[in-house]
Image (tube, rainbow, N blue to C red; front, top):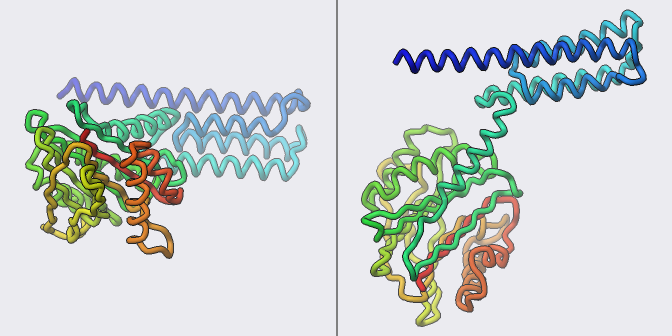
Length: 354
């Protein structure tokens, strides 16, 4: 315990030392820039201070950034008032706006627990972790899963995510497709948290217990907008038998290779996760014969302002039938064929038995 505390204190002192050093370095740089404006005005314009403020945004925390803003604005004001170097009012206003904007940005980043330049790397790591949670485990010959998730307006984070696992000695494949309330970066943090939690639940309990456990977890978070829709499928890789349940989510679709029929799977009735205590989730049981495909998707593919969702599902089924029945494309082709708007997150999964 003492070693852990000592390690934390050591890291804290190291971080504080870096902040103090960065603050001191930028303050000295601002002072040298002010001196250069007086001695060599043609080479060092007042706009140099904007560059120094930009460096502060990348490096400093709130106290250091506040001190740097005071030094920068104080230097420009002192030069203008003393007559050492005239500073146009417009230039001073622009630099002042840059200082205020930088300070507000650093403060908002601090409230999120993100500090300094390393915060960008952390966001990249979080995004990569979210993608890693959605990787489909290796499957035996005769099985394929094609999945695609696109965020609203091509943002870095999506409110739709996938979690998959194999259990029962590898014979049971479980996949859950989740649509978190909100979209893009608004839902990115919740998606990351839920994908980790759902990844721990998936495969660790009986398939029928997953959605109730996920619902309890979401209720425990007590988020203001804490609901999410989900569709969960479990497939026996030795027999092809599968079970599908939904929680406030659009129904799954099965394409039957033998008859050429495309069928909506009846799993209606389950409420969204995080809304009701102890809900009941209907289960649809079926069998994937050779050549069959089950399609899971989020509402971003079938919903449009002023349009009927049923028509959107019918359109998606028609596009899927055209590409999958002819084996001319997978999830990317279906997503492109639906031509869903870019204003919502979109997720699509195809579970296929060869």
